[in-house]
Length: 352
Figure 1: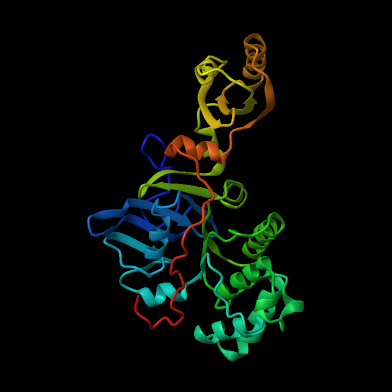
Figure 2: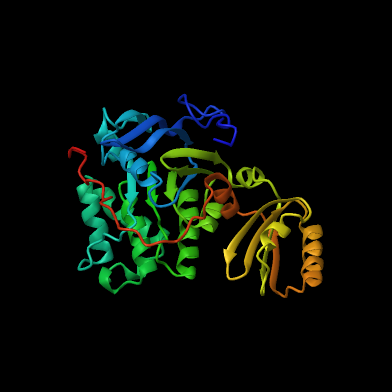
């Protein structure tokens, strides 16, 4: 949904996308209330088959509650959700069989080997014995863990454990894959490795992926479309490129000044085609403008005339960070949050 309150064509309602392909996930006017508090407020969107769909939102925005409803963990107050055509409330067993869920917390058994973890999970999902070994062999190859298949999980690095979790979530060949903050806590090299692995897995399997993340570069690189959720509502939904194009100002100037006067922010608003000025503390300002080169020249001239030293200066294109601030009025910060119970019941016969 863009700022005019309208969704792009094919983003909500119906059971087939504009190109005729069926939707893998359909969410229609879904609501979740906890007493008088509304955590999710009338949210609608669809995810096409084979799409990587991203959910962005600050802590408490409602995205985790939204996913827990879609994965049958908590009941829906109002509205409907369908996973590959199965109603989450009416047919939860079929929903569980059709999806894999990777929680933010690492949940594999530390005392078991990689292969043992995958084998137990395959048994819980009733994967036939004749298929089990072949499926595990294929997944270990996909996530580049073949040579460590007999290693105890507690000996693995954080990045390797995350790759094991992803392989475990795919062992029963689901059609839908939910990943909650898949690279939180990983170092930059491991994060890139997980991104490349997810792209590789998607190219080898007919898989629809829904991912939650608060890393803007992750969403920009992986996702075909992104939904921004804030205060329980869907405030924007489109491709990363379209979302960035929807923000007034095509360039971002980041500048740090020394001993800037009290009215410096107001002065920066007078630069060429400036649409937004954010004071980020310690003399740092983030300026959105439709003419980066001209505004930068004016900024330097203004600083020289005012006797305000420029400590640093950079110009870049609009990012998803700017999109988030534009639609929510605040930055999405990397904060520590409590892990919640997100482990899907392994046996389809269990009640949600």
